[in-house]
Amino acid sequence: MKSVGMIAMLISLLFACGIQKKGYPTSELKPKLIDGEHYVYVLPSGEQAFIDQFDYATEFEDGYAIICDSNEVCGIIDSTGTIILPYSHPDLWFAGEGMYSFRKNGRIGFIDRKGNMRIPAIYGGDAGARPRFSEGICAVIDSTDSYYLFIDKNGRQVFNRIIEGTLGGAATYYFPEFHDGLCVAHDKYKFGYIDHTGKWVIPPQFDQAHRFSEGLAAVRKKGLVMFINAKGERAINKSFGAIDEGCCGFDYGFFQNGKMRVNLDSTQSDIDIDDERYDYQRATWGIIDRNGNILEVEKP
Image (cartoon, rainbow, N blue to C red; front, side):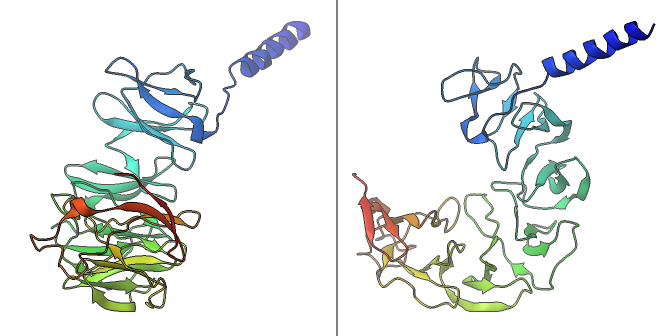
């Protein structure tokens, strides 16, 4: 009987080893629609990474991807293709820092990666972009879609300040985020930056402002874009052209590894972007470094 038990244990161990899944670098895993209905994940070679097919699949973020069934109920997989969160929540999306937002009855709530309900679906903004946690804080829209408030991962409001009036265009909400300790905020649509206590660090004075990255942020006055540091001081002497803000607000981009894509044409800087004379087609795009040096000019 002892030998039979040992054989059974050996078979179990061999089976366990046989079904162990291989993990891949998530940067190499890309979702691909294969038949007009189903997604698989493929490697740069074109080889299919996992045997599983999904009705919907996202890119990987922070080591995980979201998969959904035909009813838009979603789960989460890791880099081995293992489902670590079964299909359980409607319209799941990345919310940063291990959090995920979901939509239910037109409201937004949050779960963690294990599927634990952290914040029930009570917030507005059921259109366009989705809120994200950054530096432990998330800007959400109240249930009347009238103003932003800032919460932690347990749904507690972190400071009393709210931002009256939502941001974005064409029914696309824009959710401000904290970066380098600062977050874009506005007072009657004059923009500046607040800290983690909700206090103004850079007072509202710009027509538009974007997130900080690598110590710098793009701000706009009329058609003129400039870069400031965390003290609100101008950090690059050159000026740059504005962008079309019709869809998503002033989403100017951000520095990565010391480089950023900008509109190099500042010749219309004396014209407000809402003026019909302003012509976005005149934009000349290129790459600059953190000193404003032009590294590359894109061909039209």
